[in-house]
Amino acid sequence: MLTPQQVHVVVLGGGAAGLFCAMIAAQRGRSVVVVDHARQLGEKIRISGGGRCNFTNLNSGANHYLSNNPRFTISALARFTPHHFMDLLSRHGIQYLEKGQGQLFCQGSAHQVVDMLIQECRQANVQLHPSSKIESVRRQGDYFLVKGDGFFWQCQSLVVATGGPSLPKLGASDYGMALARSFGLQVVPPRPGLVPLTFNDWSTSRFASLSGVSLQAAVSLGSHTYQDGLLFTHKGLSGPAILQISSHWHPGSPIQVNLLPGVELLFHLKEARRNNRGLLPTLSSHLPRRLVDILCQGQVPRLADMNDERLLALVQSIQQATFTPSGQQGYGKAEVTVGGVDTSQLSSKTMAVLTIPNLYFVGEVVDVTGELGGYNLQWAWSSGYAAGCHA
Image: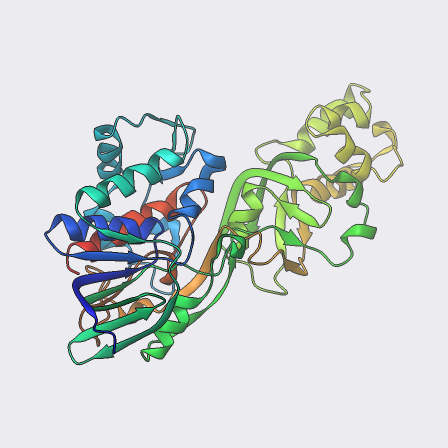
């Protein structure tokens, strides 16, 4: 019978939160093992920010996270801030830049961040085990037993950092949430987040020909509004503003779209009418011409023939448009997972399960979802740090 190897900490998952947690725990003198089924560790980090790794956001705060308990993130984010991670990058000579709205990117490649984390782990004697499939995880007395193909560990602390099912092509799954349920924990039902929205009749609608057209827009759902890029696709709508609102969207909910935010369009149309300017050139000075053609529906009335009521209707169709998505493009296109292990069962200071000593959940597997723009990686660093200081 195989005898388990004893270590202090086993971390399930070699992504951002798992590697960071392992690094911090090992620097405290703990013996740490990281196990992941992927061939390469940190796969989601490698593709983040278009390969440049949007590793944090200077504006990181609880108001930028979606959770059943919006205040859960406060403690962890305060203890490990964006500036702490920036200091770590600087010590490794990794240069970065701000691209707007507090978003920080590597000047080089996202691989620099992965290499840094792996180097830190190795210097702290973390055992890294990629390409390792877990067969069973169970609690026995005061310890956890983790068994797989060719390994068997007994650990004092178990950290679950397996992420969510978004981007399954990278090997993502709901393993961590299933494991949480096996320990009797509640899981907020997961769903895709930061994902393009689709429409059943889009291919036959007047907007189908707009695929590839992009513009700045303000997209609203309830009390949430995001002003950023919007992209028409062959299936529906995408772009940063749509991805942001998608995390709040539920089936059947309409979204409001302002295709021309910050512009007094009615005023400009009345001015153009008074000066005998045409409708097409007036709209085309503010919007992409292909979109203008669709909005005018092939009929271009003279502004001089349009009364105030018709002008107002046109403005509303542009600045108060309503769309009801039929769905979204699923986990395959989702950047994150909304939902996860219910935070009411976790300590916000340590990420430990309140009812099961030495069991921790960090990162995306927890019911904490950041907005687009570096917030989710900051949550990975902050939650991983919180658990790493105690595991």
